Length: 140
Ligand code: THU
Image (cartoon, rainbow, N blue to C red):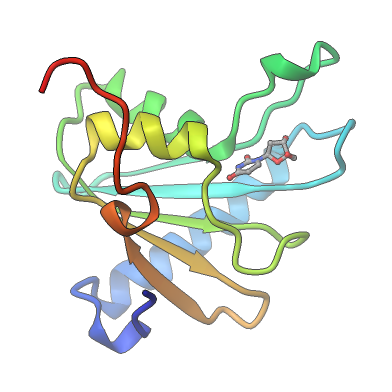
């Protein structure tokens, strides 16, 4: 179930910065095969924002989603606690992460809130647990 932007704990200053960064990251999309641009901005509890865009490959299955690019950048810089992931595509209205991204985020950021945005900059918020209720795990 989606919640409106006014109910989120993320303040206006952060939202504005996430928007600025997500739109900047769109410029680096490499999607010659699908023609679909996706950008993600990951807000960590350290205060740092990591962005990602989709990077495709002529061997299609090697394509990496924007969401995972952002997460892997953050993890590889030592980030461990994640608050919010904002995703945007000018080609898919209110885009949400694919199942593979939800599985990966469930492991590293089980309590994250995922925000999506439409072309009018209107947000919807989803706790990850509402999008993937039963992630795979063999450690539990
Ligand atoms: N894509 C993402 O980057 N994130 C998603 O959540 C869904 C799909 C990308 C992968 C591919 O480059 C293009 O969108 C079409 O699937």
